[in-house]
Image (cartoon, rainbow, N blue to C red; front, side, top):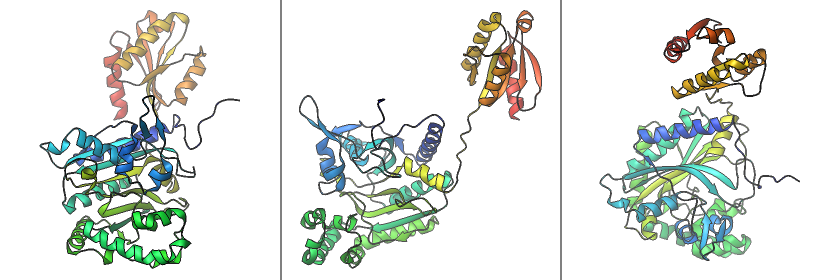
Length: 427
C-alpha cells in the first residue's frame, strides 16, 4: 500500500501554489507600505515558551500542541501560533532598544495544532501575521485592524464583518473575573470538565468554550464592557473613533474574548458573511497584549497584532467566486526541427532565460505539430522556430501567438530584436 499524506495536512500543487504566492505577496506589499518588516522564527521552540506565552488554561496548550522530547531530553513543541515566538525573538535580540519604535514585524509560515480536521481547519496550516511592539497609542490598534481589512479588500472580498471588543486593563479584568466566578460558580457542575477547571484559574476562558456555548448562563454572563474603568473605556472609545475616521464598519461584541490568555484592551475578529462559506466563519483574529513581553522575561512593552489563515482566506475567495489573476503564461517556446538544430535551440533557450524571459522547449521528442500544441497548452506568447534552413541562414522564425504575425530574426542578435518584438506585443 502506498504511503499517504498525514491526516489534517495537504499538498499544495502547481496551479494552487500560484494563488498562495499571490496572496502572500499582496499581504507582504501592504505590510511594507505600513513599514512592517519580515521576521522568521524557528518552526519548533521550547515548550515553556507556549505554556507561558499562550497560557496554560487555553485549549492550544492543554490539548492541541505537538510536543516531543529531543535526544537531549528537552521538551520542544512545533509552534501552534506566531506571536509567542516573535515576542521571544524581540526579547532575545533586544529589539526594545531599537532606535525606531514601535518595532513593526510580520511573519508568514506553517503552524501546527492537533485538532479534528474539518473544512477550513488543518493540523498543519499557514498563518500570516503582524506584531507592533512598543506603543500604547490606540491609533496603532486601528492601524493593525485596517491592515488586516486592507489585505482582504485588495484581494476582492466584500462579505466581511469586523467584530471588536475590549478586555480592559488589569484592574478591569480582575473585577470582571470576580463577577464571572460569582456568576458561574453555583452551576459550574453543569459545565464540561474544562470549564470547571478554568473557573478559578481563568473564568474568561469559559466564555470561549465550544462545548457549553449554548448553556443559558453564557447568555446572561457579566459583560466585560460593564467593568471597564475610566482609562479602559477611554482607550476603547479612541480605537473606535479611529476606525470611524477610516470608514471601517464594525460591530461591538462583548462576548468576544479570543482563545489566548495574553490579550488586554482591544481584541477583534474578521469574519466572512459569504453564503455557503461554512460553519467556521472567522478569517482573522487579533488583539493587544500589554503584559506578554514582561511575562516572558522582557521589559514592560505593549504590543498588538493579528494572524490570518491563508486556507480560510482561499475558502472565502472561493465562496465569493473570486478568481485571482494568476494565469500562467510563457514568454517564448522554442521549437527545434531536425536533430542538427537541437544544440542551437538549447543555446537560444538559455539566452532567453538569462535575459529574464520565461522560456521552455520540448523534452519529449515530439513532432513539430505536437510542439506547437505544447506551446498552446502553456500559453506561450511567442514561438521561436529553428529548422535546418533557418540554421543555415543564421535566422530564427518567431511567431506572435496572439496575432499570428511572423518575423525572421538573426540568431546572433536575437535577444535584442526579440526584446523589441516582445515590447511591441505588450503595447
